[in-house]
Image (cartoon, rainbow, N blue to C red; front, side):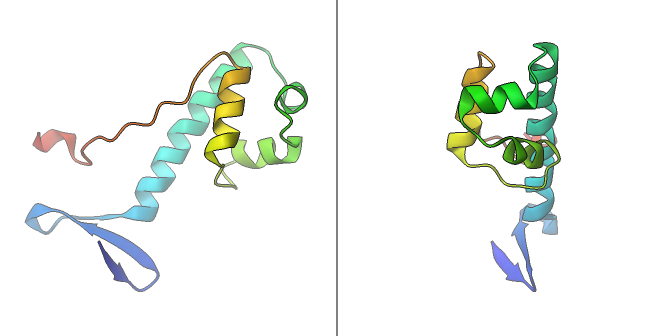
Length: 98
């Protein structure tokens, strides 16, 4: 990984580069979408989730609007309250080349 200005760039074979911040935004967007779908399908309000987890409701709102980078503890608490668990997985960035 090389630092270029304020942006971290990960270099791969063939001169293709990926912005770490772009990858992070994509991962966060996917995670938030899955979480929101779970919460809404179970008809649990942010207020109720805050009561159950002990996480302040404004923190949940910021997470849902992708305005914060949640801790692993926060994710685990929210997942458990929704009857789920957090799974972290490493996958190749460019799965088409595998």
